[in-house]
Length: 187
Image (tube, rainbow, N blue to C red; front, side, top):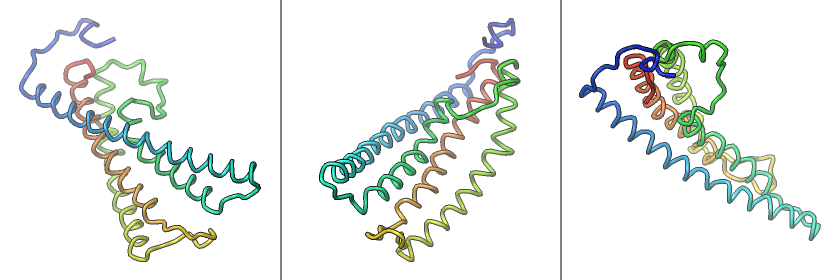
């Protein structure tokens, strides 16, 4: 139930509201597009598993690369899809108190949490993960415990990339929270 439905008067639409709607719409569209593109990573992962199962159980010839590829693709799939998950409000949340609050209070709490917890943590993680990736890239790091020794930097690139996608979607969520805090309804 929105605060407007609960008896609060609805404020007239302003130029700021229109701007927020446009920015949120653009960011959410971008996140949907990247989310659907990332979802296609499931196909190469399943392909690796199928090749491994067929090789191992039908020809008694297990592969040396399928486990590593499945591990890296699943990790990439999981991390890169996190911004889409945020947009769909599918991340774990403690709703014990949150659901009992008015939309305005939910928006205000979300603003505080995004500004004090979400953005600082992700900016720090972006910095650390970028250095982690760059070191791996410059050294052409490989998995030395694997017989085929695959390069690691593409997998490590998913960490700063996923963080950047989360930061972009976080801007949309922050704007939605501000809208809710001001107008008493969610975009």
